[in-house]
Length: 445
Image (tube, rainbow, N blue to C red):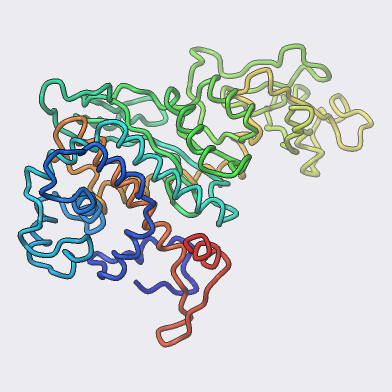
């Protein structure tokens, strides 16, 4: 893997399709799985010890790291690759586990306390990255994606979400359905760093769980994995446009970047309750503020100039668009009088947190930051296509949840490997070690 100085901190495109043995060894060393192995050995107790739990755990990790479409494919490579066998402690071909052994082992991983321990491993690696990288998690985005799966045996539940039929409709600006996607399986909810495209938190639910319902738990996990007050913004689609979500983000001092849902049936605009000054100021469903020039015939509606968010007052400040833009309008004297800056309107966010977020939707800042949601789509594609979490070959809730947890661990391990990789100046240039790489290397020591 060659990483150059002009690459970003997490150059995901540099990951090799067929990684070298040394890279795999370092990646396995990055994963803090010592306690996991203790739990596995304790659970086995006096049971059959034909294959070491460390070997079987290594097979599970290598299956994801090597991007095999199934555990059988990884076992086949282990049988013909002696160097790969030695990497996870297998001395001979006879020491490679069988397919049915791995199937039972993966099912065990889907039970407690192993499932929680795998999440603990992921959280630990993300916390380590968050401490070493000052801007990790500052700008975030979230989304849910469909994951295909198959049903398992009866009683394969253990309190986990079960696969079910899902359906998602895509609509145009007029509300007409343009595309329908149906699947059988689960939903994967991700909280992602926009700049570095690293997953900060994740949750698997059935297909019926809404984004607004899962976002509070997802955000709590992300906050626990990052230094206090690290998250500054959170971008999400309109599925999370809920008053409870906005209240939660406001209490956490996180600026939401969420498109609003169309809930008004007949109204196109409303007047502010108890508005002072000119009575010609209104707002639309998205929270954009307008003023009417009633002197003109016919009256002309213009969008007011947004000045900024007053965090202490919890208000949004707007000014007369004519005075702000330096042009004249017939109602200037009526609205602005002798004021130098013209009419000023302070909108209290408490009127409706959904419509009056700290970054109004009708601003270029909102438009620019909201585009960060595309980072989630790229991360989703990486999970589903690069690591195959959406292959649809995993049967049963226990195996599926274990499979997703392993892929998340490998994702965090690859993020750590990319972040700590030395940078080259050129093909024959020297390698440079940056501050982040030094910090991660110190923590590993």
